Length: 123
Image (cartoon, rainbow, N blue to C red; front, side, top):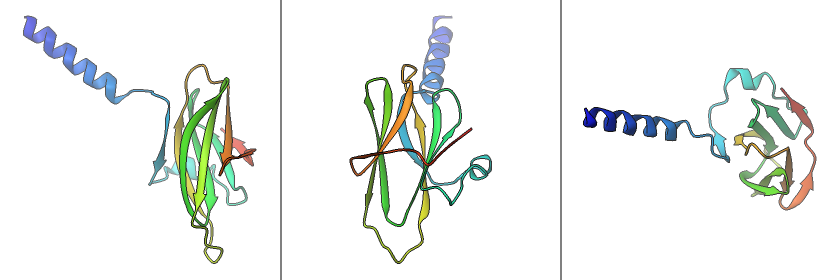
């Protein structure tokens, strides 16, 4: 009987770890259909609200883009790094999924260290 309870405990811990809602940001390679209808080529930087602490960040660039998550006071700060710009290429959307802490009361963004506003925020 102890082995069964131990097995159930291990399985539940593994499942809990897989569905962790830890703060972070990760690049999305395939854009879901429900997200693509909120995206617009008219905006360079968009924040799309998915849930209470879940967002998508869309940044259009003709270079390489990486993002990191930081914080400043009560706000989550998305630190966007844009490198290897190629003016001859069309800008393409770079999409990242963002998960924030419960105690974050806002989302801010920087591009190469400079604070910038979101061009559009959508639900």
